[in-house]
Image (cartoon, rainbow, N blue to C red):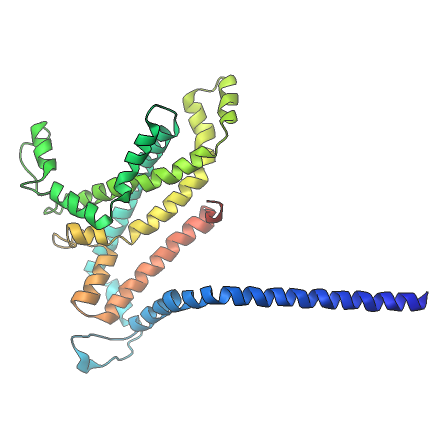
Amino acid sequence: MEGNSAVMTKETAAAGKKLLNGRRQESLLAYVLVAPAMLTIGLFALYPILNTIWLSLHELKLNMPYLGKPFVGFTHYAALSGDVRFWASLWNTLYFTFFSVLLELVLGFAIAILINRSFVGRGIVRAAVLVPWAIPTVVSAMMWKFMFNDQLGVINDLLVKIGILDHYIAWLGSRETALWSIIVTDVWKTTPFMALLILAGLQVIPADIYEAAKVDGATRLQQMIRITVPLVKPAVLVALLFRTLDAFRVFDIVFVMTGGGPANSTETLSMYAQTTLMRYLDFGKGSALSVITFVCVLLISFFYIKVLKVDIEKR
């Protein structure tokens, strides 16, 4: 009996050792398979981020190469804390992000509810709704720039003809209307993206739930509040996360429509960083602005994923 027991112990130990070796080989294979992706991320994502942070700690002006590249620590960040233009660009960015995302959410939700219903020509309506999103951003911005033109734009002509305005307005040339003109353009361009994500959330809600609610006498408003809104909430949060991050980094649409003007009234953080880097060739300060934008994006992502519990993997 003792001999059999010893043999069984040896066999068990050998099996355990074999299993452990198998798991190690699997782990090694996993690392080998993941390595190309990790190297790519490190080369094209992590290195530029670290290099930008490093540059933000130096004084580097390409138009004054004789100054060299001295280490200045957090001097650029301290200077930006007292920079009126920086705070104005941050305010413009937050203002643009809040109102554009809010309007896109309201309109996107309404459009998603509409195209989720069955009616004749629903396929055509769905395709038509997606057209603005399919148009490249630069093309959309150029198109709306012409439409907002104070002399030849169709918007002034239309509003004067229907009696809302009695004279033409320089929509993109006024501090009061320029940023809102950009917001309108962005809402027109990106609302279909919001509607598409919310529609995906609506379509996974079982129809049986609505049938049971009807049997129980629930009105359409009650169905909306107690069924649709709670069940579509994960899709809405994911859509808000994507759009908030995208809106906060806005650059191309502002660059094409106003270039940050008039008098920097539409300049966003990305625009300010690009101007500092490419026009003034001040890579130290421009890198500091880029790092601040990056940190803001990280904080927004943290807020959505940790505080609001957005689960992107389920989308």
